[in-house]
Amino acid sequence: MKLKWMYTLLLLLIAFMLPAMASAAPVNSAAGVPLFFNGKELKPEVAPRIIKDVTMVPVRIIAEELGSKVTWNQEAQKVTIVKNTQKIEMVINQLSATVNGDKYKLDSAPLLIDGNTLLPVRFIAENMGIEVDWNDVKKAVYLKEKTVPLESTPGTAQPVPGQTTEVTDKPATDKPVSVANGNSLSTIKKIDMTASQLLINADTGELKPSIFTLKNPERIVLDIPNATLDPALYKDEANKSGSTVSSNVYVSNIRYSLYATSPSTVRIVLDMKDSMDLNWVSGLGTSALVGSIQKPAKYRVVIDPGHGDQDPGAKATNGSNEKTFNLSMGLKVYKLLQQEANIQPYMTRNDDTFIPLDDRAKFANDLNAHVFVSIHGNSYLATSTGTETYYYKSDSTEFAKIMHKYLAAATGLADRGVRQEPFRVVKVTNMPAVLLEVGYLSNPKDTALMFNEDFQNKVAQAIVAGIKEQLNIK
Ligand SMILES: [Zn+2]
Image (cartoon, rainbow, N blue to C red):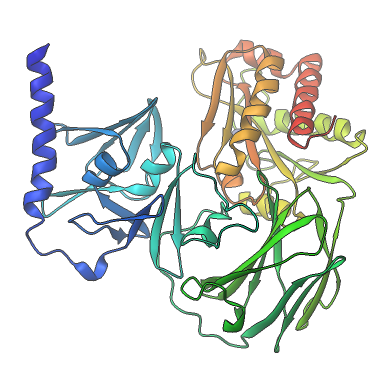
């Protein structure tokens, strides 16, 4: 026992000494990317670098700064990272990794460069519950533990580096973007929240913001492309950001920043005291926008029955297929939601048509929907059975837990848990989004249940109950 432990220790030492010794060799410092963790800049002796849009960091950062246990198996070229209950395994030059035994595909494989082990930081950090953001203004990577409040308390602190990017959970690539070529750039001169109206004035041009909402805490986020901020508005010169006082009872604070440079985009965040809608009263597409804050008439819920038409999804053991199951379930959920006074339901498809994944997400994003639920049936072995709920973005974690609680109880099948996976529809949607795998269509018993009317009705009721809990509808 003791010997084995010594051996592990030795391997660890080798793993850490190699990079340290090799770091004396010159590294391409031009490729170095500043890296911050909980606001503190990390200064690894080997600079993090961006390889194929992915930020790769030396193994020491993962072990020492992120407080995980890293072991190295020389023979298998395998790195094992353990933090709390999470166990991540990856192999040098291999794109497949496992998290607690589940397989994932990496965007970029772990590398040995000049004796330095470089690992994809986003994948590892996100699987440890650490937020990863690329700050385009600073051209730096910001890591933040989720226990650290995501937002400064309204009215107290100035925005901190990285904060302007963390209000979004949009999957950002780690790739630095160039400064916009700036054709017809509007300079925003005034951002004002009066008792009844949001006023945004620019010197010239056509302001066409995209709007989305974020929960916990409630925020309304406006991204205005082809716009920049008048430096007079900066409260924080270095971060090209600022804030202004709100006179509206529902808006506690307004923050803004130059969020991106390609194209130049101004982001305005309204910290909300309640879940509200922002509607344009006038000026959309001009240089003087006027918006009003109103109670949402109804919550917009998008139901997405997976697959369709030429894409049947999984084959069911009863001769049917997944697309048929998904549509049948989706229609039942939709009908139940229609009976809810506070909900306006939408479906990405209500017949046997095929819709590309990105179009499904765009449909929900364009609606500025409050939640997105994709319905699927699973397939693996004839003996595989059970219910899974998938999410990807951190803003969907709670929603996934709520949905799974109701769903697993309703199916009565094995509870295979809530899982994080970058499925397209839950990744590129702006609102809390889940993908439900109700049961296994490769399993005759699951299939018999899943095509049973009573079972489908029960599951549909559970899905509605979960959506209502998420939206706080009693
Ligand atoms: Zn599917």
